[in-house]
Image (cartoon, rainbow, N blue to C red; front, top):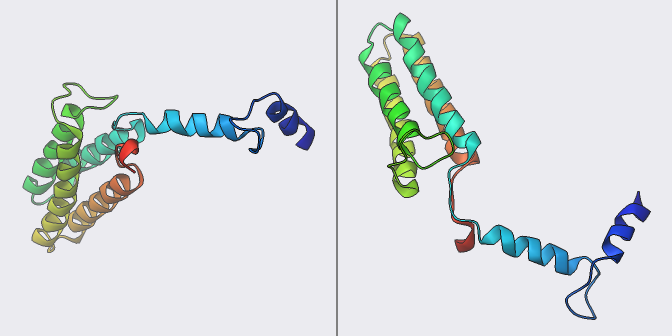
Length: 147
């Protein structure tokens, strides 16, 4: 296995005489990666849709249906109108989408406190906040050239 990787690298030309054989290839790849523009990932946008669908599907059993309906519709509109691979309208820029994602998590937590008399509805809203917060944390859209 070591022979295979060294054979591949031995055919690559290095940038300067003192560098290892594969360093030019790695640095060129990294330069191409940093020139990508900021965009919303497929995983992130799918997660937005799943969390919004979770809230909208919980309407049938909710005692106070206003919170899941309002927050789920808010999340669905956010997912459908942002600039991403699964977007329907592509009207919301990425910085605004990130702010709306944070507002979505806060709205879920506020809704969970508002309906705390029904523990199942509160648990659904806290679960949606946890899922959306994890989605935002793990797959945020950033401009790689600025990092």
